[in-house]
Image (cartoon, rainbow, N blue to C red; front, side, top):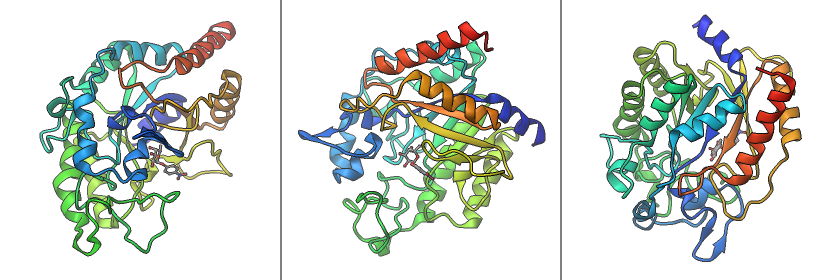
Length: 326
Ligand code: JFZ
């Protein structure tokens, strides 16, 4: 869809939000601190699903206010959000009927935060994007797992081989058909217009499965864009990794994702905050090349955005006002 692709490059600046059960331990497990990115904590400490799922009982973000999140994004000049509806841990941050492993059915909070965000986006003219881990799902026995002989991710297993060590018994298409596709259908049916679907880590997905997923998205919402990490070169736009910048010309429009410290999901001990000036330089140099800049925030388990992130966003907002940037 040519018009919408043009819209994509006009979006320029977006807010990535990594929020989930991993925000509760926030990088520490049983007194041990975690290196590497916080949302990988279940794999890093090989936490059994029974124990990890108990985090849901502690997840009660009473300070969550969708309007506040959207307002801080808007003030900084952002035009879209990308919210983690389901990360690799498999926990749905919206009311899913496909699996009770979700924020409404499994936490004392019981609110559909995606619905609240979608409404807030509508109120403030913000576009809504949805992150969905379509292959990795540690909650499911059949989630993608490249197997015992494959290289690991900084020493961590890609698939859940702690609860489900029998690799030969895994059937990825069973997970894909029974959870991934139906959940993507929910996401594109129940939350109004979705600007883009942000898939991630295309492990174990066949070309036919990728086509099926793409077709599902486009049949439900023809204008919804798909990122390159769907796999098999099927994306409408490319996603660069953290702090990567484009090398040469690209066939499709690009987006570059960045964190404000060294994690995506909130980590208590990560104080490696970058400064606003550096961020603005990055934003400008991306936008100059028509690359969108997606800036990540890892909200705290109580629902508030970390103060350091808010400070940086505030400085960006100030810079915009000073320079009359729209
Ligand atoms: C993935 C996730 O594993 C991670 O937890 C986070 O959600 C991030 C945004 O995406 O990590 C990646 C995946 C691909 C690249 C970098 C980080 N890459 O291609 O450079």
